[in-house]
Image 1 (cartoon, rainbow, N blue to C red):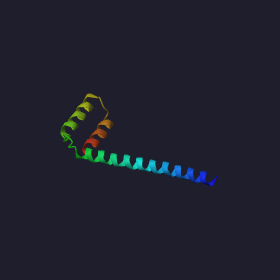
Image 2 (cartoon, rainbow, N blue to C red):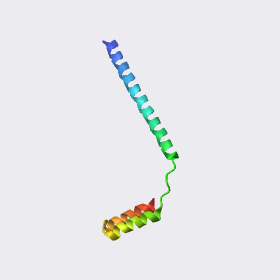
Image 3 (tube, helix red, strand yellow):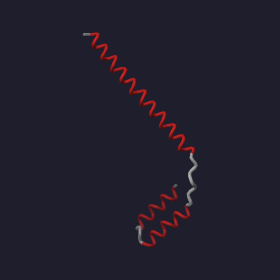
Image 4 (cartoon, rainbow, N blue to C red):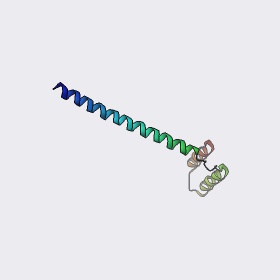
Amino acid sequence: MINLIYILIFLILIFVVTLGFKAVSYGIQAKQKNRVSKNIKFKKKNITNDLLKINNLYKTGAITKKEFQKAKKKILNN
């Protein structure tokens, strides 16, 4: 009976260790993907054009003043 309990504990331990290794593996892969995406050069944004676009949207009535201010703040903070 005690041998059966030890066998079950051993199997559970193997299962937990396997899950741990999988989690570590996924973490390493995610970190590598993140590192690769940081190395990609992003197109430089043109703040002036973005501001002109949202200004035109505001003038035509497509967006409200509150939405315009929110979008402007977002553009200027990035």
